[in-house]
Amino acid sequence: MQPGQMAYDRGITVFSPDGRLFQVEYAREAVKKGTTTIGLKFESGVILIVDKRVSSKLVEPDSIEKIYNIDEYIGCATSGLVADARVLVDQARKDAQTHKMTYNENIAVEVLVKKICDFKQNFTQYGGCRPFGTALLVAGTDDTGAHLFETDPSGALVAYKAGCIGSGRPTVMDVFEKEYEDNITYEDAVILGIRALAAATECKPTSQTIEAGVVLLDKPFRRLSESELEYFIAKI
Image 1 (cartoon, rainbow, N blue to C red):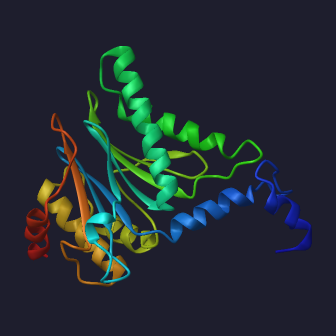
Image 2: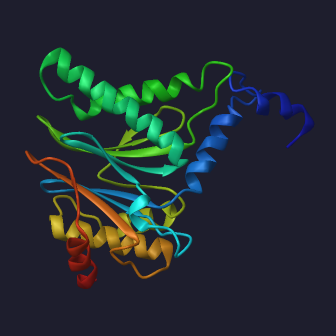
């Protein structure tokens, strides 16, 4: 980095002369180094699939959590700093419950995602804080159908038919560009997601190294069991 850029590098609230916020860009780099996280919409819902490969045989696989329930019909998967993700998930749960208590209805997926992104954006605009070093893939259903959103450390959001965050994003998105189709079936979506994850990680997937969650129209968000994952892995 050039010596003249150091002041812009240290200050979250200061733009560099070429219009960049370096701390936000560094937060994006933290996401790129995170675990590969995949989301796909299919004909009746959304599936989230995460690589939760453990670094040591001494670690209990069940202690590694990458997929979270936010509301009854909304869940999310994370990539990046796990502690930052937990804070965002807790905030999202508060927003969902506040909406339900106020309006006596479940919060719409897009409304919730925008609230999360507004919360993240605040940490890019004020001194004395840093951006969240995590991105979320939010999946859910509401009165308007099934939705999949990606949130960025800057507070930006994008809706996807099939998306990926984390270290394996280029490989996974290349697979999706070639093979994803609209109105894909549930089984085909899970198999495509696991195949793309395997291509990105270059390792054979197992029910111990993958975590998945699914939400169907008019059915709550839930995690897939190990037996369900083994069924889909055997199909590949």
